Length: 324
Ligand code: B82
Image (cartoon, rainbow, N blue to C red):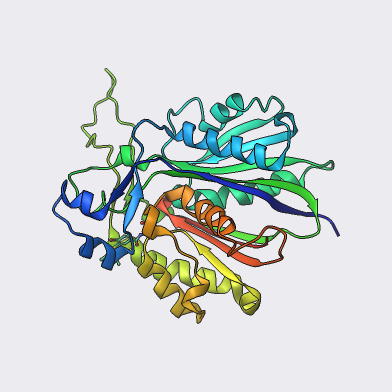
């Protein structure tokens, strides 16, 4: 039955500027040893002139070039981001205009570090509603460096900027098998960023107007290693031995250590690249996928079974099982 939606192409784009842990030690009171031992991060890319839309447009152009599709063949563009250039227009509409995908609808989706998994799941449902051959772009893109408090050594060392994405098509023999999405809004305050608190003449509240990204590391670490790990174990269940690789949100190497122990899966089946990019939120899973395809660990059409798992602010999380 050719009714699966599958990833037919991948691409990524990152800023040129590399900022190492040593570079950061010149700005805040930290060290390579402190950062690397607690997070697994060595360096990250930081935007100097690039906006989120610039990185996402590069990804979209690369997806088109590699797939040899014409822009008119694209039915929709979804961009997962928590750092759009504007609240309106969406990054997705900026991409749609730039690549002249004149027949595509386009919108952004906000689910922080779970954004790519949420968007891929949404795209899967959108494509299932199509009866003719259709194509959708799903991109995760962030310029988190502009939301960070560069005086706060507990957060500014963790994040990086990047965009990456996939082209999906329908009517395939294999592809996205199933997914499950979750949210726990009761713990929303554990990770916040970018409040909209410009005052108006009628505004009487006197709220904190800091827009910086803030997180309670301990609380979200426990969330990842207890709640997300438990739901992932339930999600994978009987497919566990069939799964070749786990592509999890690249927040912290210690989370991957704990996940592999809890699931009873060898650590090297949890792919990793946060050493070179840090935490790139919605871009982290497609960036890992695109890099691992580029270095031939993974291959499109080779029937490898993958689990994608995103988790972060919201708190939002979700898992996808697919054949590549
Ligand atoms: S931490 O709790 O401060 N820590 C644990 C090993 C260092 C002592 C920490 C650090 Br540092 C960095 C990231 C996390 C973490 O748990 N992150 C997340 C957890 C769940 C969902 C998203 C994230 C994220 O950072 O994106 C903890």
